[in-house]
Length: 154
Image (spheres, one colour):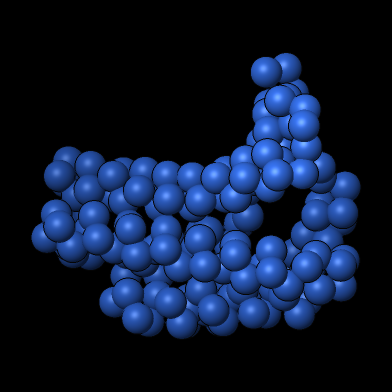
């Protein structure tokens, strides 16, 4: 169901997504994380991976490919999201999971917050590392990494 909702969301926003990806020269958040993180919280890791693959495969055909994004970049992005989902699931598993009945308690909210932190850290960290490596290899300018990461005045 989450995969279907993620695909439906992409279909509704496909025009805006294409435009945003064409004009943005800095990294940006992708709203598919709403669906992939929900899958990490609600589903076992193997099914979460399937949800990520369904959503990102659909995005490839409807958004990324049509604007000329190289397949290796999309594959890398997909892999980072899968790893981020597994990191979030690991946090949830270590904390004993989050039951739907007890989502309002302070322990469960802290667990969700830690899972969000794990998801964001893994996803952002892997992408930032790839950008830094690419900028180091292709540029002799030290500020290229900061620009690629969206830090204009660093």
